[in-house]
Length: 204
Image 1 (cartoon, rainbow, N blue to C red):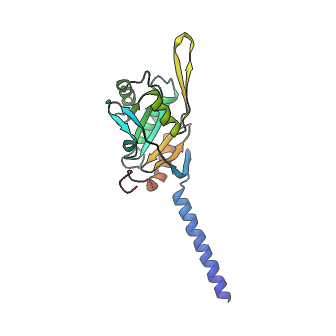
Image 2: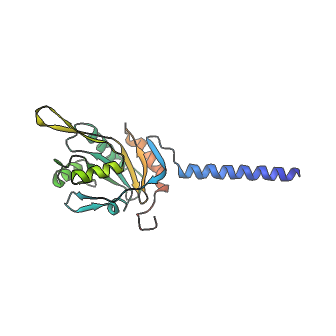
Image 3: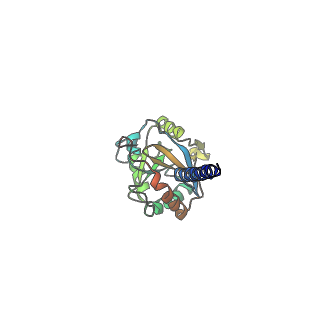
């Protein structure tokens, strides 16, 4: 009888160890953000890339992507974040990792303006824009707050959430929050890399 109790205790310990390993594997500890318990689905959308071509949900889910919402006339937060993401892009051990900049100021951020802006940080960066209603729909799907703030003299600026999203073939996997540090974010991506899904439609 005693050996049965010992065997049961050993099995329970092994099960606990296995469960802990599984939970650890499925929920990497991120120093600069949060790995979501379940991927958040990305709704269907159609925006416009820097070449004037349609950019859809399928394009976004085609490879692991760091998504950031901002605008080209942003005085500090956007350029600072994009500089960090450029560093991360060349350090992170994530195959085919991309950076996508989604403009929240479609009135001024035309495709050519957007392309010049993002390529100033890295030629591999992509930017997308669209009609105001399209932008707001995508921002809402990502839970990004966007607000136009009128300034004296008839000018305006844009307030927006300054977070970075990690998207793979399943959807939004992780959310990173400022302040951003390239080394820390790179380490987080190294932890997340083995768990990222392939492109949607290719076994995702």
